[in-house]
Image (cartoon, rainbow, N blue to C red):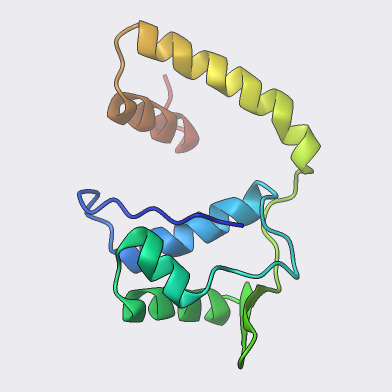
Length: 126
């Protein structure tokens, strides 16, 4: 199950953060079709966001075809994202963790690492 965390200082609206976390969980194989998302009440209790914010995030995911709200039962994953099997991600995760540790020991902070990764992903790497 996904545990939602909202970073109030990120500048990204809370409902988008919640949606992004579900999408990431789908890509990483932590959520599969048929899995139930936390109830709105549970998300409100653990993340401190307003119930309408959670409902908006779940609605956006539903419009994207990733989840389905079932009256009286909850919200369930119906779609998937990502094409790699979770076991194929493990070696990549280990290499990335080693690279992040190396970057941190070189003095980079999380924002520096994020900027560097985004540059590489966008094809702007030199």
